[in-house]
Image (cartoon, rainbow, N blue to C red; front, top):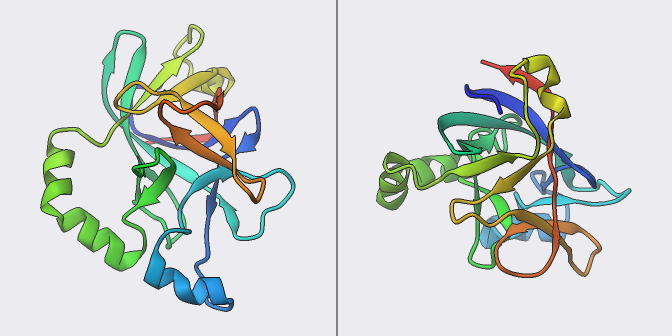
Length: 187
């Protein structure tokens, strides 16, 4: 895979990875969102419905290569609401963007725990290509890969009650996702 920094969309067999976004006030759940913080920034697929779901480009910051995997720190690459928010997972292994909004980015970046984690490369993701790549950036969008967390769990999908396909990385059962990059912009 690409051994430099780049920005790209993530797509799987279910389509483009979307992010839940309730960034504008106007409904009861959106007004309560700042108090809860639990519904914004989750990564998912949702067949046919895109209300409060936005497509996202992700920034991949190259760290190093290991065997057949390339290691990156991944952050949101666009939209004011999510720009630079880091990809991580919660205690239930659901994937989301952390450090969202201006206050969230400031507190996330100044948190002593996160400063240590970032210094020690503890916020990282592994990209495992499923086939050989010739190194030509023009063919990178044709390479399938697994996305793994730092523990080696592959990103999978599971349906919730709203038929949203939530992304997670952990030991629970689910459909393992095969990803491809789209609209790649190398720095």
